[in-house]
Amino acid sequence: MAHKIILDTDPGIDDAMAIFFAFQHPDIEVLGLTTVFGNVPVDMSAQNALALCELAKVDIPVTKGVARPWIGAESTYAHFVHGDDGFGNINHPAPKGKLDPRSAAQFIVDTVKANPGEVTIVAVGPLGNLALALRLEPALPKLVKSVNIMGGAAFVPGNVTPVAEANIWNDAHAADIVFSADWQINMFGLDVTYDLPFPPNFVDILAEKNAVLGDFVQRSSQFYMSFYSEGKDTQQCYFHDAFPLAYLTNPELFQMTDGNMRISTDELNKGQTVFAPFGTTTSSLWTEAKSAKVATKVDHPELTKLFIDTYAL
Ligand SMILES: [Ca+2]
Image (cartoon, rainbow, N blue to C red):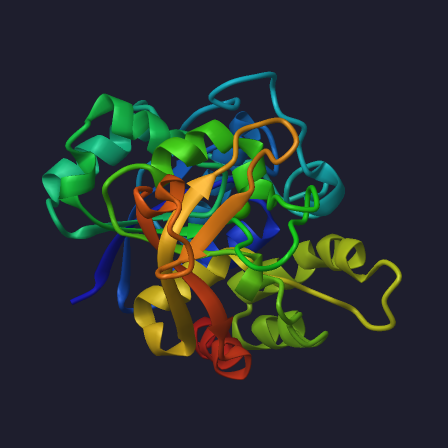
């Protein structure tokens, strides 16, 4: 049976690559896209998500979610990574369709209640929509199958500050709420997503295998690759957001470490995912914290093959 998912996203170039992977994979059923501020403002994020659905000819609800962090000022965005349009400045046409009128959080609650125990929430942006859904429906954790998150950095440096990864840093208080809820969290952070770049010709192969979706990823990724390749000898590319989706269909590619997780919300360490593998601390600040599974190793060649094979379907 296909994995039913809600994909919470802020497209975003690696988001686009991940969304198309989910659409292409026969064992993943995307029930809807929920959008959040992050790489770009939420209005752009929502319109971009609609545009990706239209390009892929996938007719599912797309909802708009939270526009700013749980606490504090409006975020700064990552246009320097994803371009002014979130798609690497490729002038992709605006979508024709309409958003589902519900908020992202309400859509998550409604959809999970309609499919109790069956839905995995795959979150590849800041976590405000999930935090808000938990406030709307406190029983949500009992009804969700699991939550697969792209975010955090357990044993490696951050990418926004020395300790924080962008998605968690962007809404640390929301992340704290989400990681403190009583559900199964599988975290795919920089430990695996930033471990190895994809080969420079990876996006060319995607385009060769899939003339519409692969082509879009290839064109939109040029700006993104320039960002990641600055000061490097070869083109570098990372597709962070597809990792938690690959875990759904191919968990054997990942080594997961079990432990207790806390999210820092203080100014200096904002967004740090402070992880204690089981048995490594006696501090009740961690032993009494909620547990999470953290991806600490991935079979990169097999993962690369999985993405290429799935785009080729
Ligand atoms: Ca993202």
